[in-house]
Image 1 (cartoon, rainbow, N blue to C red):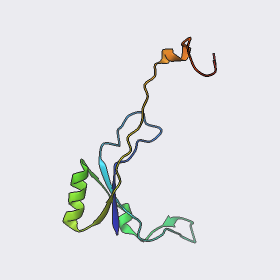
Image 2: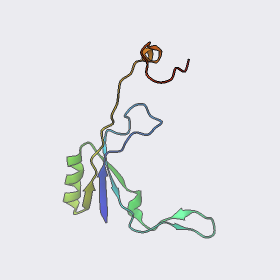
Image 3: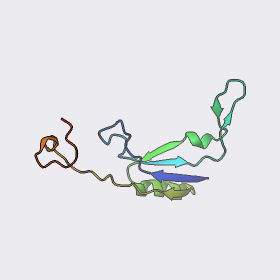
Image 4: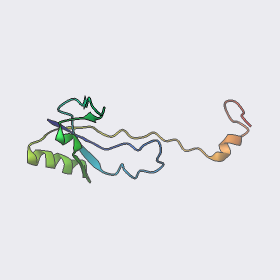
Length: 101
């Protein structure tokens, strides 16, 4: 079973970086999920899918996997491209695009 080490991206509902500071170790699913016929619940027999470990650095997560003999795959985080813009630019005389006010 392969473990995946990654740094989670922030959700669209967050303006800060609250849950993106740690590196996370998740296991890839070993068995597909099945629908239970009586109640319609989705279940799995894979108990490692419930395990989620957090580490302060990527090196700590890799050392944990190597210490316990776990095969791992590291996904590098993608940096967000941010452009700074001021509110006053919405009303600038030289504004490009359609005037909406």
